[in-house]
Structures are given as structure tokens and as C-alpha cells.
View 1 (cartoon, rainbow over the protein chains, first blue to last red):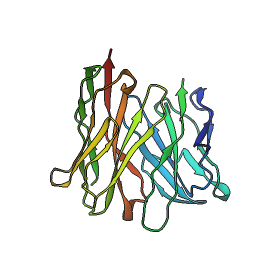
View 2: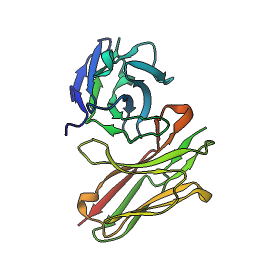
View 3: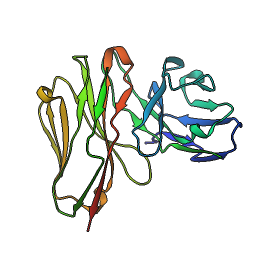
Length: 116
Length: 116
């Protein structure tokens, strides 16, 4: 049974550069979530997809952030013109939603971004 | 608005002591889920339990037990006979089902340190 995977695990970049992260969810899961976690805080919701449709975006997701989930499989999160305040752990989670029930979200290991 | 409060930032115990982690939540929805996740030093969030708002029955799983009380909006987590391997940051989270797409609202976490 393969869990949620994320790549890369670590990314160091210079301010102003663009970065892209990838998330591969558990294969049968139709929902995919992105969260951001800064040091000493709980994860904060960024956005989520139901299959290939992006259904909600947080106010935390500025115009420099874009997420995609082509074909409803893996997802990418891109940050353009990175700023030092973007330094955080970016977590991906997936779940299987059926009707009105909500299933448990399972998390990947995260991508730790450091912006110099 | 929804909110999760974990008032205990850090707890330190000696091995074999019992420890309770507090979680208080706020929501206007009548249907919601509550979760606990463990985040060991490796960083990956590990799912521990999910409880829906209609089920106030307490649950025990090995050394872990959970006390859900709607009257006080609390969902506390107790570890009995703690072990060094229990050292981690523990997060309580809330999910409002119908209007919020199942996204998780996390507390700030409680860092548990179990000393030998």
C-alpha cells in the first residue's frame, strides 16, 4: 500500500526564484489538499481538489501561488517570485470522499522550503 | 468561525506517567469531525483518530484514549503509561463537512516530551 508521496523533500532557493512541488496521492483518493506549516504552528489550509477541479482556495494563497491537478492524479504547487516569508513546510494530503461522508486525510512527508 | 485551541504548548513527563492533551473547538455547524494527528521529529503527520459529532462515545486504543464532550466542546487525548516513543507534537483538528470541503482546521499543537 503506497502512501502519499511528495517531491522534493527539501528545497533551498534564492528570493525571487520560482519553485514547484509535486504530490502523488494515494491512488484511489479523489480529494487532494495542500497545507502550509510554519515553525511552531499547526498546518494551515491552502487549497484542495476534487478530482481535477480546484474547489477552494485560502486567502493565504496569494497570486504568486498556483496549484494544478491535471487528470485528477498528481498535483503540483508552484510559487513564483519566492519571498523569505514563503519558507515553510508544504504538506499534501489525500482522502476518499463518498457522498456526504468525509474520510480521513492522510498526509505525505512534506516539502521543506527555505528561501534565502 | 471555526477554531481549535490547544492551550498546552509543551508538556514534559517521565516515562510511565499518564498524560492528557487538551483540545477545545469552536464551530457553528452541527455536523463535523474531530481528529488527532501525531507529528514525530521526522515531520510526517500520522493519523490517530477520527470522531464524528454524533458519536460521543469515548474510545480506547491500546494506551490511547479519547474523551469527546460536546457540552464543553472538548476532545481530549490521554496517553496511559507514556513511553519515550510517544515524544512528538500532537495536533487536534476540526473538519466542517457540508460547507468547507472537509478541510482541516488545526490547533497549534502540543509538544510532548517523555523522558526516560
